[in-house]
Length: 143
Image (cartoon, rainbow, N blue to C red; front, side, top):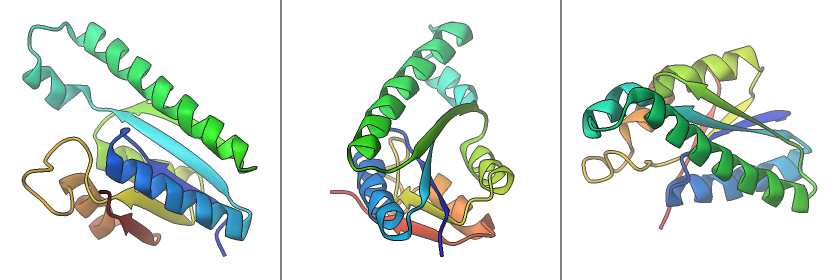
């Protein structure tokens, strides 16, 4: 039923909970997990104007690599094939484009990430992906 499952991640608790669900689905359907970390530099540059944009990109890429390395190790320990990617851009656009380009059958996302948690029960990125996705989206809450 599912061959390729996409889990966008930012290292947040809801993303970690979504990863656990994605692993369960991958084990059940012998699917490959695609872990995606999006470097969103435009809005973050406004939050940290003292940082040069290149320094910010490098910091976010380094963070993304650490998060993806951890997920890869956890998937490997469970016998799950995982491929990962770090892409720059607008998160919901990157997620949907990745899903289209890689034949994703299922998206598994946390209810919200690190941004906007106080504003929404379902984060704005997750909500926009759910509204625009042509494939099923499983939304998972964290603690």
